[in-house]
Every structure is written in structure tokens, then in C-alpha cells.
Length: 165
Image 1 (spheres, rainbow, N blue to C red):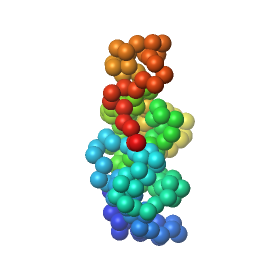
Image 2 (cartoon, rainbow, N blue to C red):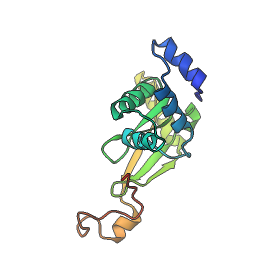
Image 3 (cartoon, one colour):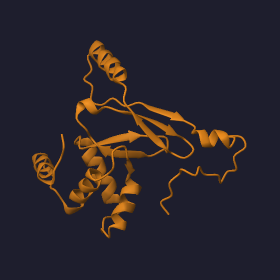
């Protein structure tokens, strides 16, 4: 389902919550993300600060958690040790991720056989599939070229890595 402010408000109200300006702003940021981009709560908070929004980091965490439980956002476990989020797409849009553990570069890919096998296994065991995501952890070619892991200095960062500073 594609959420608008009105549909989010209706969904929140039906569950006893309300659409705060902060939640609406968070939804807008996710709606405007380029396809394939994912945000952690910290990255989302940083973007909100750049837009001069006064939203605390704890409010961001609570909001993305709530929106994930509601099925508005998809919670991703990538290689960085913390969660990332993206808008939940309709069922046929299942996709998976290849992630470099050195620079966190993430590439999305689709593979219907993964979804089909997951559905088959769920059916066999009597489970209902909620989400299907595979994260393949890798080392990117640049890190390998630089001698990862044994010869890299501890402060080395891939030129593709993103800094929030």
C-alpha cells in the first residue's frame, strides 16, 4: 500500500494513535527517497536536522518502530549492526540486498525463486509469510584490492563509504 498523509492518519487513528507533524514529516522523507535508498534512524534524524526540523532522536526511533510494526516501513538488518528502513512496497516488490561490510555499499536485487521457496516452506510448516528478505554480506572489490582484511589500516575507509559528519 502506498501511504499518503490522509491514509496514514486513518491507519493511525484506527489503532488509537494520531498523525503528529513529526510522523508526517518522516513519511514524507521516506516517500521522497530515491529507489534503493535506506535510512537508519540516525541518518533520518540527520536529514530532519538538515531540514531544520525539531525532532529528537528518541522520537525518530519511536516513530520508525511504530511505522514498521504498522507495515508502513520495512525494517532491514544490513551489515552495519543497526537497522535501516525503507517504505514497505506491495508484495510483488520483494527484493534482497548485497552489502559490503567495509563500506556499507548496498545493492538491491530481485529473485523470485527466493520468495517462491520461502512461500513453499511457510505453507509446508503452516506459517504465514510476512516478509521475505535476504541480506548477502560481502566485501566490495575496492576493499579486496586494498588487501582486506589483513593489510588494511584500522582507519581505512572505502572511497564509497558515506560519512554523516
